[in-house]
Image 1 (tube, rainbow, N blue to C red):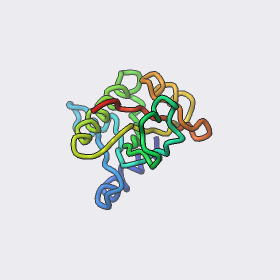
Image 2: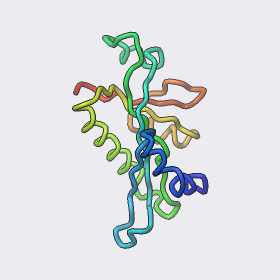
Image 3: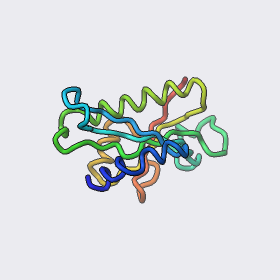
Length: 142
């Protein structure tokens, strides 16, 4: 968690200012200075070849617009409380709101390990690159 803590302390404001990513945090309402969990969103694309055959149908042969969820992480004390699911739902809701003004076909995520991959696959994310554990979730008809 030290790498993630360092990211929060030093890079979040910089990434937002230069338009690279926006970070959202969940704080403990009883201790507003205590961050329970957070995630970051940034623009992304997927190549058509990385989508399943069913998802490729009817899409153009150029990069497919997406939003990347990064650094979805929580404090050790907040684990196993459903916060990961809460944050993922919040991220997807935000992405769907943006979809009204910006083309977004899918949500993408790169899992760092098998447990993280399993978490996303539970929510119907499809594996698009086994070597890097990249996954995506098509958002369906808007």
